[in-house]
Length: 421
Image: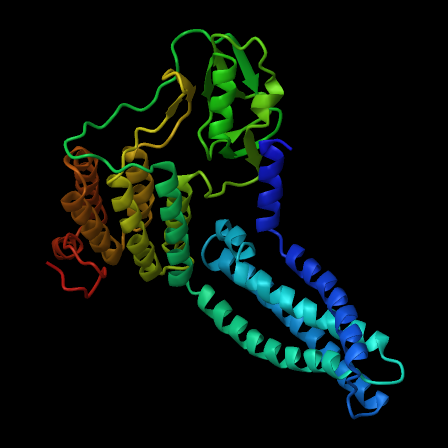
């Protein structure tokens, strides 16, 4: 199994709701067989009639089916609300929620267990087996209440944005593992090689580049004694026929399919190797909140609250990663990664534009930019000063009244009412 097949299996498992419940259903049938054998060996029988036992198990099975239906409906409502109130790009995170999938698996387990046990009852009621169904149902009631509580909290924009920022921070640390040393010079972005490539490998599918096998590509390049350049950046959209790789030097025994199987292309971006996507989602939430139909600048300010620590984290890291060397010290793989200007431009520009007539957003943006200027290394400050200048120009352009200009130009960590300087 190659890297691409493993990647597809893993992502399919992470984004599927049915796999864990299906496992739970099979496990329930196995558990019923084991429990009935244990009851037979120990000779445990419940002191109730067969009709009463069947009625109890029927009630449990019907109630569990209702809980399963309510849980599925709740998750579908969460998807609809999240995509409508925030952004459709958050839907995949809901399907990856391990708590929801685990809870649904437990519900299906109890339902299948009760139905399977009901079908096996003949002349007596096995005590242990029935007790497991009854107490399992009570435990599932408590679990359902916890699910409702978790679902309500998950739908709050602040909680959703905090989860996005947490995942984004983990991706940033993975893509940029090294901190920026004191006195470092900002490296030039990795550029394409100037020489003519010996071969070009093109994409055979349409979609966004989700991830690539860094170590696998480096091994291939070292084995074939060549240099491989990956043309698109993770997150870019490629069409069938677009350049995917350029090969320089060597490459006698290198098959195109080996390279194609080292890149995952899908219908929408993911955060796994795309540090900009967390910023993209947060900016989209802020942009939708600032749209005339919603007009919720406080949610946009909450998005800026989560963007600020991510941007500060990026500013403290060495962003020069874009090539990998082999064991012989030669550069074997070249690929694109976003630089500091990309992150700053993505984080601020659209919020500044869509929040042009919001004093609250202007004040919060100023606070973020000024704090970043105070906290990031000197080589990262020029672009932030440029953004501060553009913010001041936007204030003058959108607020003709001098008093409004003065209010919008203040720094305020809450947007409005946060103890402005």
